[in-house]
Amino acid sequence: MDYSSIEQNLNNFKKLVAGNSDKSQISPVLVQLKLAATIHLEKPTSLSNVSDKVKKDLVLAREILELISLYSIKVKDIDSFERTFNQLKTYYYDYKSIIAPSTLEYQIVGLNLMRLLAKHKTSQFHSEIELIQLNNLDNQFIKFPLLVEKSITEGSYNKIIQSKSVVPSEYYQVFLDILADSIKEDIANCSEKSFKTLTLKDAEKVLLFNDNSQFQQYIKERNWKVQGDVIQFGNDTNQTVEIPSLQLIHQTLHYAKELERIV
View 1 (cartoon, helix red, strand yellow):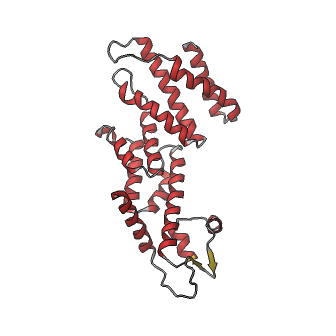
View 2 (cartoon, rainbow, N blue to C red):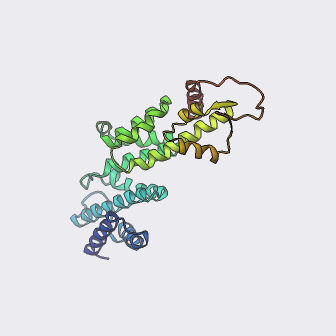
View 3 (cartoon, one colour):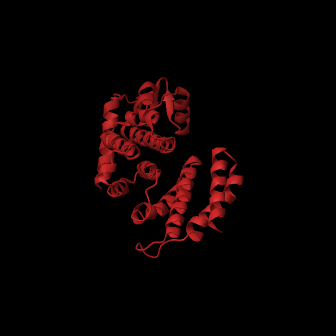
């Protein structure tokens, strides 16, 4: 496959994705592009005396991988995004001395940081941050996941939900949704283990629901028993237990997370 054919495939891929074409149309082109980026486009054997042709091939291969990574997020194939990002790291860090930086680099690096937060991979998150130059930490695409991580550390879960309105790009929304669902699960699990009862009103607040119908559906999915306006977590429904404050629930969850981080 020659350079012009690869470029043509890439342009076709862009049109198909922009037009929200069916996966059955995109998949064959995607396969060809993956082969081009990994096999057909030439890589340098060393970082000295790299020819212009090889540099040109590197830039095209990087663009292919970048667009594949963004498409993976669009279709919510997070595993594919992870694999593609791991390939891109070579272009971002190993080849940075021989090719010009990409305009998409920090957006994609930031998206990977969001992936790590959504997957609770805190140590890897901080390892990836160390690879970023200090003067680039204020880049909007990097600053956003740093602020999200700060909110998680502080237990300020409402800030995470509210940040959906200020994402630096639409792709970040996918990871915020995963993170929000994960936070809801953590709070729900913590509530079940720590408390016997919780009013529906307090539960809806603490679980960060803005839509009552979604909250009711969530109650059904978790098979919670509701009596009147109270959710019963414990088996002893005759025992009267003081319902804890929302702050205490958040603190309990926060301490649990900090203990998990230390361990």
